[in-house]
Image (cartoon, rainbow, N blue to C red; front, side, top):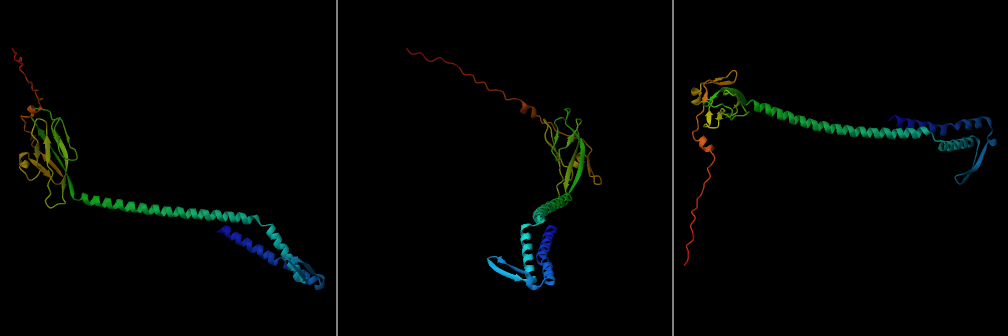
Length: 253
């Protein structure tokens, strides 16, 4: 805007000079010289004109000023015009950048709202669950428990001496939730399910829940029953050998 204002100001000054400056010689001619002693005669734009007195002096001076003004154009105008174009281009680029920033902020706001909604939904779902820690011991004869597995999520840990500790999640969002149970599997033994609540296993294994600390302790060791047919199933199948008796073909007389 500063460059544009400068161009307008210079234009006003130039036009003022072309119009006002010739008045000085016209006034001098009018004051100092008689009207009959000042004449201006000659062709102009294909016309032959004759002017006299102060107006003739004003016309000639204004014409000369106009010719000089057209011939010697101030270079500052071109510079100001170039700066004005640069400023307009920068202003256009700034507006484009601002629009892109507004679009990006709008997209970020949408993503933030989506993440907030997902977080609120996850928080609401977490309220429907309660985590319990279950610990106990497993006995499976004299064999080490290196192959014993407990089917529960997340994956539990079990020590070499048979002690285990798992985390189970209780659902609180349904009217009659089913409390998770344990499933113990070991090669050579039958699978052994252990129901942690509302079952005979509570008395059999002395399962003691602690509502305050959300822990369940299985005080009695869980005994696995050996599968007598397991070893038979592990034996490789014996190949079947077929014997064929060879007989000589009958002789013909």
